[in-house]
Length: 141
Image 1 (spheres, rainbow, N blue to C red):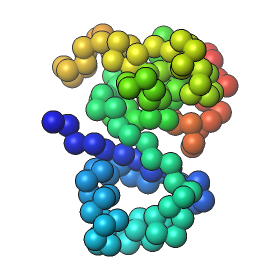
Image 2: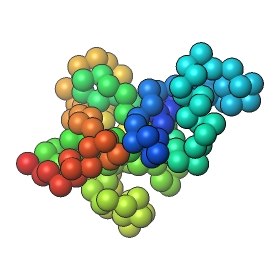
Image 3: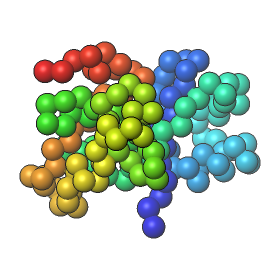
Image 4: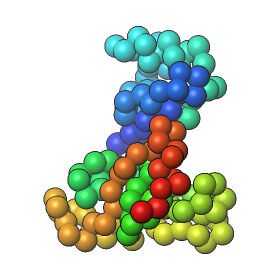
């Protein structure tokens, strides 16, 4: 079974926290023990201002993990990774609602079989995320 990993976008600090396993995060919250005191203080003081982004457990063509909110280049288009209808998808709209209208592609289908390193089938490349690099959504080269 894959471990659930998340990244946290902190709206108040305008900062992306490093990925962490969900089980570790929960133990920090439940037991108030955290080796990274900055992370704990940020969560304690403004938990409501945080957006949790789940890892898809898939990698791009450069072996980088793909998370919700990532912007990926796929066949020369900059697309957003989202989670809806019980699966990860990539879509072109700026709102997740667009994914429900059928304006999306299943992330697993787009990735193909990427179980092998440097798989030539993998056409997905993480180029940023919607929080730190929103301007990438306007760039369609």
